[in-house]
Amino acid sequence: MSRENRDPVSVLFSFVSGFLPDRLLREIGRVRDASVGFDEMIREIRLHADRPAFLLIGGRTAALPVALTGEELFAFVRGIAGGSLYAYLDCIREGYLPLPGGSRAGIAGDFVTENGRIAGIRRIDSVVIRVPHAVKNAGELAERVFRREGCRRGLLIFAPPGCGKTTVLRDLGRRLAGGPHPLRTAIVDCRGELSGDWYGAGACVDLLTGCGKAEGIALATRTLSPDVILIDEIGGAEEVAAIRGVESGGVPIVATVHGSSLERLFADSPISPLLRGGIFGGFVGIRRAPDGGFLRYEAEKPREKAG
Image 1 (spheres, rainbow, N blue to C red):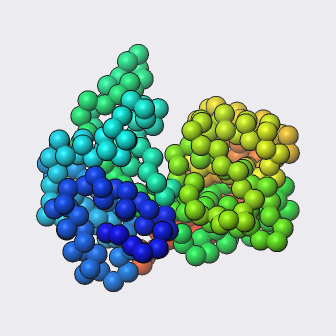
Image 2 (cartoon, rainbow, N blue to C red):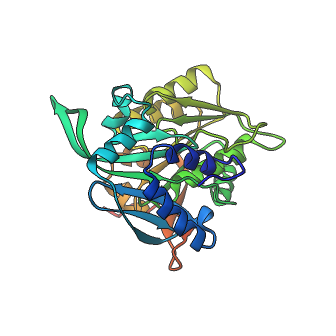
Image 3 (tube, helix red, strand yellow):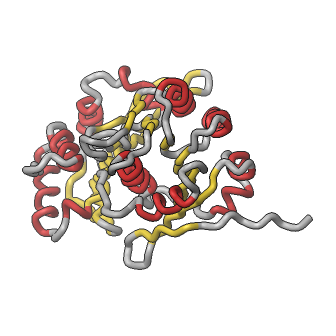
C-alpha cells in the first residue's frame, strides 16, 4: 500500500499498514489494483470484530472476504495508540483515535463508564478509518462567501456527516492563509484532522492541537492575534459561549456543524443562539449529488415567521 509521494494519504496508509494483518493488506491491495482511481476515491476502511471488513470507495461500499478477530482488532487499536490506550483516554472518551495525515479512527464497542462519563473501553467491536483527501477547489465557494463580507463576519459550513465539511474547511484554511496577502489564520484542531501538510510551507497558519475547542478558541484569541479562527464540528455549550465571546471582540469564526438544513439549525439546535445572534454572516451547505459526489451551495438565512 506504499506510495512514492508523501502526501497525507500516503502517510496514513504507510502508518496503518504497519498494524494490519497481512491477509487484510493483500485484499486491500487486490481491490486497489482492480480499481481505477482507487487512491483518489478511497474514503474509509471499516474494520469489524468477527465480521467482514469494508472499503468505502467513492459512494460505494465494498465488502472484503476478511474478518478480523476481536484480538486482532484490539491489537490494531493498541498499535495506532503507540501501545498505550490510557495516553489517549481523552480521545477515546470522544470515540476516536488520531492518525497521521489529518485523519482519525472512530471506535465502537463496550465502553466503561464512571459517574456517567466514559472512563475507558473493555472491548472494541468496530474501527472506522477516515481517509483524508485534498479536493481541488473544495473551499472556493466558502472563500467567496467569506470574503464578500470583507472577512469581518463569521461563516458557517453545514452538512450531514460524511459529506466533506472538514475537506472544505482544510481547503478554505489553505486559501485564507496563503497567497500574496494571507490572513493570520488560527486553526483549532482537536481531532488532528486539520493538521498535516495541507497548507504549504508559506502559509500564515497557527495550529492549536491537544486542547478542547472552547479552550483553543480562547487561547488563539489571547495569544495569536488572528484575523480569523477556523474550527471543526461545533455544538457544545462551552464552544457556543466561547464563540460568542470571541466574535464580540471582532474576530470572525469559520466553523462547521452537522446539519441537514439551515432551517432546522435555526429552529432547534445547540448553536441556534449563535445563528439568531447574527454571529455568522454567510452560510455554505453541502449535500450529496445524484452521481455520488457532493454539491456545495450557498444557503440563505431563514426568514422570521410572523407572530
